[in-house]
Length: 146
View 1 (cartoon, rainbow, N blue to C red):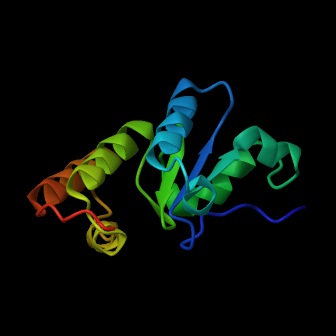
View 2: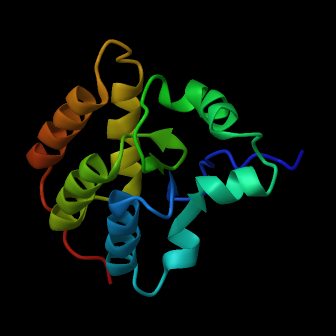
């Protein structure tokens, strides 16, 4: 069996989805707009059906078993990671990235905020997203980097 494409901390955004999924397509478009000149170094998208076809997972159940340590009981697509840390699907991702872009919050600051929520095992992904959005909204706007 080929090596499974686990999310990496070295890639800003890693996403998993399927070709028929409208939210997966919306995610891809959103990322293309977010990173028009830098897509390859900021983002990696894996098609779940390709992962199975390439024998990186035996079937959909095997894919979910391999992802379970990262995503828990989350069972929707797309599955989105920020520097290797899971934080939901398209809706959560879009809300968070919109706030980050509005305030020009540096990646290190976002990672720190995400890490502060990592240990909150009792919170659902929606509750974690809400908490992260509250924290992002309280951040001061940073000047644009040149």
